[in-house]
Image (cartoon, one colour):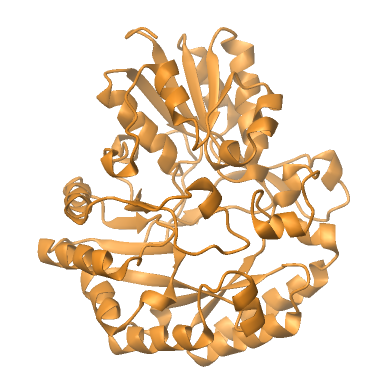
Length: 429
């Protein structure tokens, strides 16, 4: 690859029944952009899902930067024809993607896709590239590619990059990619300057093995950036003017000693920023000291993993928490000064075989603690024990979608009743 090669990075549109900007950014693509720039490459970056991009339709945000994506109703895939839901394309209109691809002679175009069932967005971009830039090498990466590389290859991408073959990307693009995550530079925040939030990652992997989660498959080893580097990175992000920093770690609070030291460093830095945790926090690690540090460091809305209070379910899905540990964590957070409005509990629904009574009791339990309920509909993920148990290998990844998976199992009405109950309880808070 020559120094004059032009590289375009694209985060494609999303095709789905529902999508919301819950602090969503393509962090992997941002890291690749950073590594390419460090290697002196000529890089352009286009995030079709960027609500704040000059080409995007104006979008309202809440005080933390979250909001609705622009969407257009599109024709449903053949297999969804009988599903009574509107299928939509989310993101900047197609004409702008065509424009950016057509206007420059790109040598390499890199795409990312997160959810396995979002691959139609990557196909849309692939078809545009094939129309305007037949000679470009088209590379796909992201969680979808790591979970379903064979599926991605069949779609017609020139190269499929997974977590396990990053060195291939290094060879193709002639850049240095560190072997360990702790040596990665800051992601490229330049495309998101003057936006309300940006993500950060301080670790990869998780100590737990939840049967419905693919983190262990994607990152078998836990890798953590040194505390002093993380604190320095957060200081740098604050200097750039960002007011909301969103942690993407799967196990942010593990191990406790490292995290407490990290939070103490953030507190000493005296930064005027808010921190957010969209991934469920492990309640096992929230002792009173941790709760106080979370409060003093500037964490605003906490999302706590509860999933289900049934002991058998907790044990059989990985033993991530007990109900007593959840109760203890909430008491510690209240003692540290968090208010009920700051706390949210993720509760799983839609797993075949899990009784609606257990889910209802779990919602009542969270509600009794004054916590807002966040019903999290089960999405089957390849390479997880639960996916294998449900024998889902042969189905089109489109059916991994949590909105329509219940149609596969016939428990749609039950889930709707649970959602209605959650709304009722949340209104009472």
